[in-house]
Structure formats: C-alpha cells, structure tokens
Length: 218
Image (cartoon, rainbow, N blue to C red; front, side, top):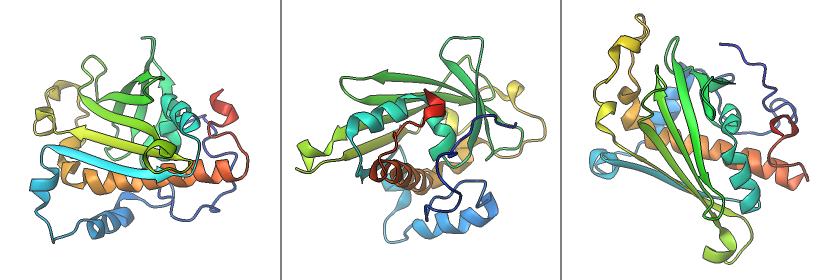
C-alpha cells in the first residue's frame, strides 16, 4: 500500500541518527538489533509474559506530545512499520498497511482523554469489526514527576489471548505466514525502538521551534 502522506517531509533525510523505520532498516536488518536488546540475565517470560510496558522521557512539552500522539496519522512517522493511513467509511476508523506482515491491513481507532493525556490505540490485523489489540499510552508532565520540563510517556500492552491464536483466520491473506502474536516476545524491544523514534522526532522539532504535530496533520 502506498502512502500519499508526506511523513517526515519537514525533516531532511538522515539528519536524526537512531531513527529506525522499515524504509531505512528492513526486517532482516532490524531483527538482530532487537534480539541484542533482549537480555538473558532475566527470565523474559516472567517479565514480559502477560504485560509489555515501556516508558521514557521526552524533552518536549507534554500537551504537544499528547496532541501529536492523539492524531492517528502520527503512527505513520514514529512506528516502525505502520504505513499508508486512510480513513474508512466508519468515522474515526483508519486502515493502514503493517509491513511486518505481507499484504497485511491493520485497522486503528484512537481513543483519547485530553485531561488525563491518555491515548489508546485500538487495533487489529485483517478486520476492523473487533479491535482487540490495545496499545495504552499516557503522557505525564515531567515537571510533576521529575521536577523538570518535558514529558514522560508510559506505554503498556496486555497479552490478549488472540495473540496466541488468530480469531479471524478467514480474513487473513492466504499467503501470509506470520501472525502478529508471533512477535510478542519482541514487543518490549520493538516498542522501545519505536519509543526512541518518538523521542527523537519530538525532540528534533521542539528544539528547532517546529510544531510537534507537523502541518500536514492539521
């Protein structure tokens, strides 16, 4: 699926080191990076079996970071593989291509609370009727928790049983081999990679006086 969205058009190519997107690091090149982030000094299943949580500090205003995340199209920029967001006929529901899976469509509805600065992405591969993959994010004012300007982002996923077994096999592309749950053991490292992307992009724009949410999302 091609995209007409001018993602990162306000940033010259290659000027932010450490941003890994499928365009500059394909799955084969990125897998060893993620595997290196998985440490053998702790029991991975015990730490990441039922929940996957990552968190980090971003040197950018919290309400600006929240507003950026609250726009579903931001996923076009800071996630590793979600591309080509297009609104569906259902209000608030977007379809995109998840390039982790061949010919895979992902559906996303974003649920937000501006007062609490929560952003929940309700997603599913292949079909948009039952959005069971829930990505829970909260932006916290770093002035409150760290006594310094900026944002703290908390991000949690729960291991829904559908990660183990595809509940809608009739909607899956016939040629696709992996199921999203096959990547669960890599979620923590993969989400940390994406949180690093989010941090780099927000901080780049904030330090240069650019809007955190670029003009093409307005």
